[in-house]
Amino acid sequence: MFYGEYIHSIDKKNRVIIPSKFRDTIRELGIERFTVTRGLDQCLFMFTEAEWKQQENKFKSMPFTKKDSRKFNRLFFSGAVKVEPDKQWRVLVPDYLKDYAGLKKEIVIIGVSNRIEIWSKEKWDEFYAASKDNFEDIAENIIEF
Image 1: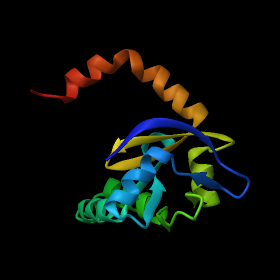
Image 2: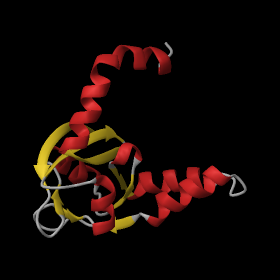
Image 3: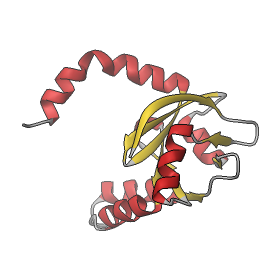
Image 4: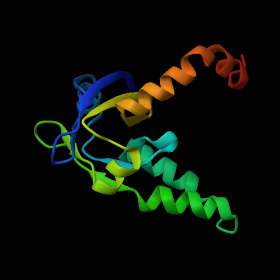
């Protein structure tokens, strides 16, 4: 659904432009809104409405009697905001999410199949540098054929 890595910038009004490759998918699927929230590894997750509902069902079924479930759900859901692209394909990122992800001028937007991730360029570069040489090891640990 969403694939690739794109370098963009966040403007002075905290708006992020959706990469043109993603726009084709958005038009094809008739997507009008997204939900943006705190992601893992200090990035932002951006879900389509349909994908958000699936994630919400998954996470709200976690037992609230478990301390880590409560913490995760609080951070994940309290950070969530509905966004709608404007005519220039920009979405507004609230200050609290911008601060969480450390977004400055340069950002990286990546497609991770069912979601879009928004990273500060600095943090993405760090993540990529630390992970790229371990790609095969990571795959071996998680993928079974």
